[in-house]
Image (cartoon, rainbow, N blue to C red; front, side, top):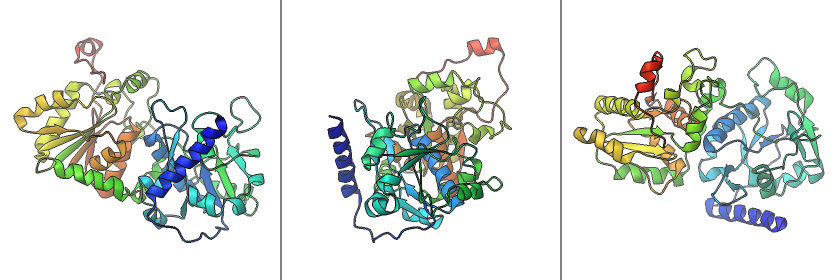
Length: 393
């Protein structure tokens, strides 16, 4: 049964590729400088996008071609992750303006057997995983399904203890190249992304090379054209049950998730609060009304992982004659493309999904702001107890 699952995974991936690609590729030439390959195995899209920017910067620093991994997705009821080709959501060509890249399926099909023969496939990790003596690169989900998609099995492990991904720091890139020269190590295949989370400040600007595929962009434009005439405001409400629980730990993790985008990487702009992570309905309404009034927007687009608050926000904005909308069917990538094109965008400081939209807008020079930021002084315990309750979405 396991063999059937693996074969089915490979077949499904090839079928998706057939639908996604409009034509064949010219034959690849081997990059003598080597390649960087990794499994985007931490978190969902927002986290994977942060890691991608870091991996792109890392590959550039080492002057190795970055092998573009598929995006890892999880479907309800499916025990194994699904790998979606990178170019399903993003164009490849714009990335080449910054550095050399190649789609993973293309590398494996055209160069895998010669550049990276099966008997030389070594997995890289910082230290041994899961109480073993090796990287165990395929243990668990999505690790196993990811590598199975390309028929990859590892024959050994390599630990890079003492090295970091920060190639901007002193001579770290030289240390990697000295220890792992391309002539001996043509492929550095990492168990997880060779990048930090959240994305390093030095790599945030690389987002300008990420451009939505025509398929995603066309859906976004179609929705935007269906909105009432005039400007629209884009907002992101992160409020699912998992998020509510995560925000309970915010006081113990002052730089939780993507919080540095607001608070700074050294908390120079304060520490995360519950209101910053899970803004109350009154905070949302107050901020939204202020932005609507300032921009003269005719409508509001809401992206959310759970409750879009369409009825509640519609009621609050009725006197301003502003309508509230969401995209159906649910599609987080289309949602992000819509947020990226709004007159103004309001996001969640702590959310990596919000951070993606903010980076895209920064690259385009569009204005953005956040719920409950800049931080206000902490209310007294008595005031907090009587404050408007948060809506668990």
